[in-house]
Image (tube, rainbow, N blue to C red; front, side, top):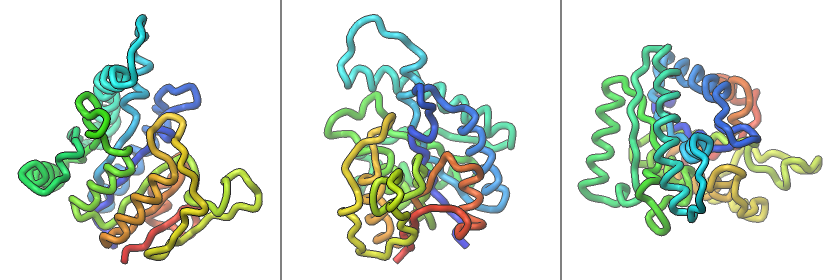
Amino acid sequence: MCKRIVIKIGSNVLTRKDGKLDVTRMSALVDQVACLRQQGYEVILVSSGAVACGRRELKVKHALDSVEQRQLFSALGQVKLVGLYYDLFREYHIHVGQVLTMKENFQPGEQFDNQRACMSVMLENGVLPIVNENDTVCVTELMFTDNDELSGLIAEMMNADMLILLSNIDGIYTGHPDEPESRLIRTVAPRTDLTTYIKEEKSAFGRGGMHSKYTTACRVQAAGISVIIANGERENILIDLIQRPEEVPHTVFPAT
């Protein structure tokens, strides 16, 4: 039985088609995380959505470049996002703690050790870490590719048993998911090359895409951690993945 799970929730899961935060889905995912905690699992959340939150909070009257937009909207949105998580988890008497990180914190050394120690003491005291990139200072070459990469690094740093990447599709397909002849790839054995099935395209509201998830999953699988790619829009998805995985569509990269 796996005990420590890193769950990455993508922007496309947390936002509606109009770009606004989907509070109903966010609440449903919080309910499921609370249920997993009650069953004895340790959970670390890597949550996107800050920039999307901030963009809806403020109407800017003058032009901003891409870096300025990211810094401004993430600074605004992170407060709103974590505030919502705080309110939702408080109903279950679960304390949450925010961890804003940068790529350089994953290089061997003092910052790596400090970050791991911080998250370890949070888990030891029943605090649920909510992790995101520090978008206010991380720009250009200092940025993670996306939160898929970040969640994989967190899973390795914290010796997780499983990484779950929640997107808005069920997993990796042999073609476009909307094409009737495409089939879902349920299991990906180590060192299996699926690049012919995956296009390098970005998601609607985030920086990632299926290529990013595949790359992260392969690396984390090689580190001995199981990875699941699944649809965060499906009802009760997290509970089903843990308790009834055979009943819910997903792609799994079993640990080596």
